[in-house]
Image (cartoon, rainbow, N blue to C red):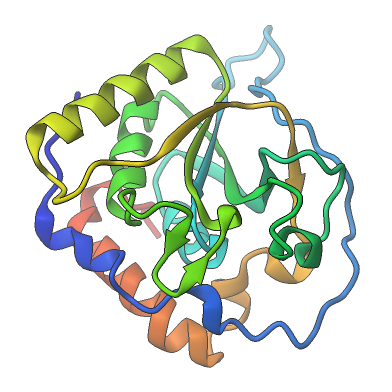
Length: 226
């Protein structure tokens, strides 16, 4: 299912990034450690089994708004993973001392959307060739990373990365890291559903909305039906 990326879509990654965020309001986190695992309904029911993917694509505000629109994606949570400090705050992660990456925990229905399809979108909605950086955002918390939950995810991500490098889809080598998932910490409440909750905010209008609109055009066949 590997697909060569369309170079035109790379305009996603070239736009102004989250360094211009307004974080003047900083309420306390309303939740603590949330270890992410694959989710499933009652085995005796006819409900579909759900799975989990965890991606770091730089600022979680921008890509949260994108993955939320995909048909088959049940829930997207912005948060932190890959670090050494338990239940970190946004300020601690921004200090670049905790080792965490801003990331998305994506719960999805694999019968509607596959991990391969999520990977395809992952590669296209950020720049995987810049080390510890997305646009104006610089630091290890903005690294491009796939936190794999099982060996199948690791193998698929590794193969996809290798094929993309061979294809020449990017001008520079991909620096995305593949890290074994350990634990995911949800970000503070004000980070969740940011684009949906703050449509009039300048960052949403001038940075996130253009990215979302381009995504909707390229992946219109994968969007939820409203």
